[in-house]
Image 1 (cartoon, rainbow, N blue to C red):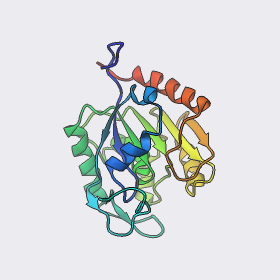
Image 2 (cartoon, one colour):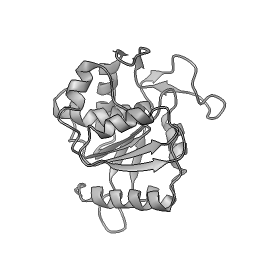
Image 3 (cartoon, rainbow, N blue to C red):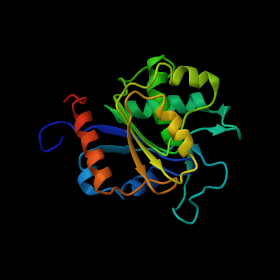
Image 4 (cartoon, helix red, strand yellow):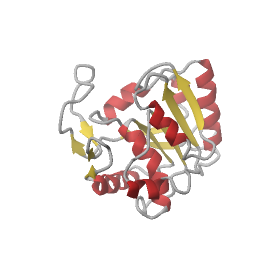
Amino acid sequence: MGSDGVRKPRFLCLHGFRTSGEILKTQLHKWPQSVLDNLDLVFVDAPFPCEGKSDVEGIFDPPYYEWFQFNKEFTEYTNFDECLKYIEDCMIKHGPIDGLLGFSQGAILSAALPGLQEKGVALTKVPKVKFIVIIGGAKFRSPFVVDKAYSPPISCPSLHFLGEIDFLKKYGMELLESCVEPVVIHHPKGHTIPRLDDKSMTTVMDFIERIKKEVSI
């Protein structure tokens, strides 16, 4: 509950490929406490232990996890259905979950889940995802997932962070085209969770005030 008596928006936070919930928590603490104090963030580890080298080795300590596995073209996924069921179980366990916040692989999932839920493909046992925060995200490329996740466009409020030198930037731009009135923050960094300058801080706080209205006590 916030100081104004309104329940804080609760996000299930989905970390990046071959990292962990604890690592995402550390990464998000780049953001000012005044932002974090307005959110109820729930961090979980992905269901599968990392099956190869992690890009964060030497920066963050293991263990590392991954949400699902994929081919080089990112068109075929292994353990995808198991991943969706696991996220649903996490939403039940830690509910009520209002929205999803994701980075990298977690962002790709977070952006797809509202559409998959609407089509009855995923999250059928939990309340509707009301809003999403996407950091370094992109779209799935499998025709089956694309058809279900992005058509019709994602209509819930969405906040997107796009890094100027992020290798996923052009794919993040494609994702914007599948969202209705997305809120976008551009930052000069690469594939990372950026610090917030004054302008982006204002945008984030405005988005938080907007989504608070979607949260019932």
